[in-house]
Image (cartoon, rainbow over the protein chains, first blue to last red):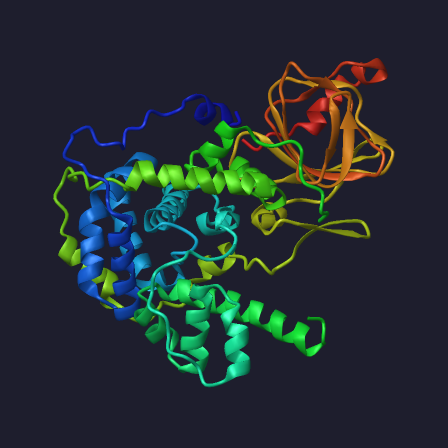
Length: 217
Length: 237
């Protein structure tokens, strides 16, 4: 049988919502700061703290998905490694830390679940959910300090037209010649976010400069 | 692939099950391929991910049943600073998005969403079924139902039939219509035993279909050849 019915019909009750009143909403800002420290400073304490906050829930979710506590532990271990190694792909402009981590854990569950059932591997979890990464559609305003004035008036004028987060990112990397790592640290954002802002900023900048040089504006 | 946006979508329950990782792999792949065509479902699924993540992770930790040795796990997770090179298995499974996946039929090459690569790899030669209808069975997917690429040449028809079970169809290229409507690239439809239809394709079309029981032909001469439906239906199991 096509197993569609099974999962469509049973709208599973939300077993993961904590029963006790002790559970508290995790602060998204706190999680984001920890991600910054992990990625930008390779801070093991931050990794430890994020997993002290989340490991119980990740384990709970993974056990529910795979039906197997050993598999769930393996997934938790792999998730931890993924945060350490692939943290630079996290982009705070695109997703919350919890959503990013959820997709990692869900994809790991998918892969391990198939392997445990000795199923043919038709697709990896990562490829299966590849199209769900939200579009790059802009930026989030934040209140970072303004960078110092620049000494090239032409570029400064073009930069002025960029949204602030992109302006800061481009200026730090290209005018102050900071590395991505350094710039991310100065702005207090993950490297993935910084790279995306630089990319968006440069794209806009080249539009402006090209149009101008062609005399359209 | 065309700029047409699909008009037939998986139900929101099905999208939710896909996001939660609860659908079987073939159906998941079909939903993912639909999403590749459909910005609307892409957005909805991203919202569902957000919700599922909130339910699963946003509240402070629950105690694991057996205490964890987090320190040891951290040690292991951070042991190798170098990113390990991808294993051969990962290379096979993680097809880069830029890699074009194509289905070939005679002299035509039809590009399909990359998530279908594992299905395309397992598809066999094209068999003539009836009229302008051709079928390329997908083998080795490990499910007890049948998965086929279906190709209808322009002007093709399928004799009127009902489905004993359930048929999920994803249109990949071209279009076809039945009394219910017109279906084009990206459209995702489910037919059940209540639906009788006789699809016609004026422009020709390529579909991927998962079907869990033989078709039951209900009209004219094709009733006489109902045994033929056994040809159409070859179970994997």
